[in-house]
Length: 519
Image 1 (cartoon, rainbow, N blue to C red):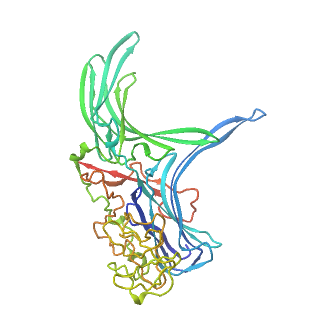
Image 2: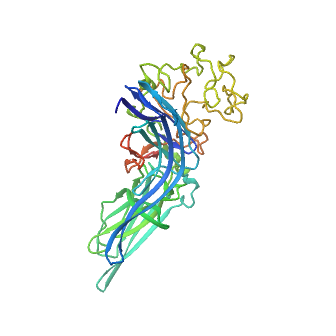
Image 3: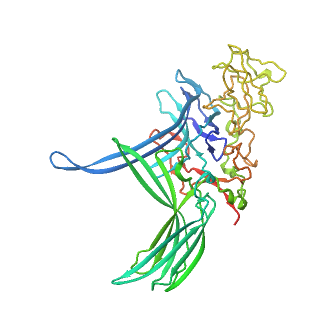
């Protein structure tokens, strides 16, 4: 790759899972064994939903000849798109020297985002893409997807906390004879569940009035997705159906017999119902019950509507236990490289310095400071230490205080009318982080604060980033979930604007909350 050994995006949260309003942070790792000339490196955050499919139809021309034409139905919703240079700019060239470089970024997500979703004809996808822009050469791209979750609290849904009974009767006819009915009854105690929870299904079959055999009863949880799109002003909807999970009795009900069973069907990691905040994709679930009748008779079928949420009904809290592993503790192999692994050895490079100030002090020592004006933007990268004076001159126009988080005093210098670009707490859940991508490159000669992964070894435990953490949980006593990849597996996330020079994992599966219940 012409001296480029690594060009990859890492998230501070190894599971890369967040809720709307939380902070996404990480860094771009660039490893060079040869100097690179470039315009700079730009990072783009994007969140959007897309739907697309093609349909063919036959048309006839004026001569009566028929031909096949293809029509593309498509739709798109954009939730955000932010761009910023981590180093360099559109103007002029720069040289990135040999070495290991780590360029941090940070973004506060908007509220009310739909959950990540990957389907056959559309998706809701959130990505970070970094581009090394090179004059007169192919650009290098690095891309990574992350999961965003939208809460669906089952306790706020109507009519799901009551039992639901589905009854199906069937008469059998042969020539002029009629027998029956066969009666199939399926009951569930509620109709709202979360991933990891068992759906109890109570089945009854009355076959006393026929001479046929019911060989099996199959219960299947089915997901139906509707994709809405348009072609030349014509709206159309395409539907897909997938089996999520199933269970069956494997027992028959013989002639003039009866039977009853209690089955349990566990809900795997799947997206919540409705796909809230998305107007072009909709998701619904239902529990289908099928009684298999031997002979030339049609099977019996009935359905029960099911809602899959992200917060379970409070009535089930006593049966819940914390996830078997800490909610955000990944396997060792899931951890991104430590900061020292990224920038260890070699000469100081752009981005994070290879000899950062110890984590206990966010202030540079005076011998490391190069006096001079503030960097572009008129804000100081470092406040004066308590009781000391800043080596930087005051910014033009005076100063005004940064807001301090509740219960804390801000050590940062004031700025007129603005909020601090420096998180008061290091970590992906910082509520005071800025709402745009931010490069935290110290000025030349100044050692910056350590990046979030500094000092983290692969054996340190627990590594529990607080990205999927609600500082004001609606149910403080609810045991936390784990976050597992969707049961339908990874999908290819390569898009039209991705080139053959795009680095990164192109297979992605969203993660959804998975709860653990007592058996």
